[in-house]
Length: 199
Image (cartoon, rainbow, N blue to C red; front, side, top):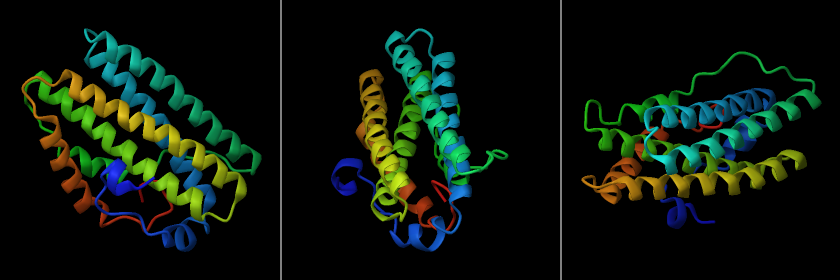
C-alpha cells in the first residue's frame, strides 16, 4: 500500500519511531491504542445521535461502533495476556488539533461533511501507523495484529469518504479533503516522538 496514492497522506511516519520510541514502552502504546478504539466507537455513536434521519449513516455507524469495540476488546486481551493493566485514558493531542480545522457554526451539511472528513483523516493516519508498526516492530504477535487492523482502518477511511461524497450537495468534498490533507501535514510534523498511535 502506498500512502501517497491510496491514503493521500503528505508526510509519512519515520519507521525509526517504532525502534526508538514504541518498542521501549509497548504497554503505553497498547493503552493508548485501546482508548483510540473506544473513541472511534464513541465517534460513530455521536454521528448516529446527530444524524438520526440519515438511515444509511446510522446503519454504517452501528456496524462501525460494534467493530471498534471489538478491536478495543482485542487490544485489552493482548494487554491482559502480557500482565498489563489498561490505566487511565490518554489525551489524543493529534486529534484535538485536527478538530480545530472543522467548520464551527456552518450548515448542518457542512458540519456533517467536516465530521466525516475528520473521521476519514484519523482512520487514514491510523492505517498508516498500523502499517509502519506491522512492518517494523520486533514482536511477531503485534506485527500480525497491526497488519490485520491496517486493512480494517483502510476500509473505514474509504467508508467515511464515500459517505461524505454521498451526502454533499453544496460542499465540494474533494476540495475540502485536499484542505484537510494539507492541514494534517502541518499537524503531524510535531508528532512521531511519543509511544502513542498518533504520538
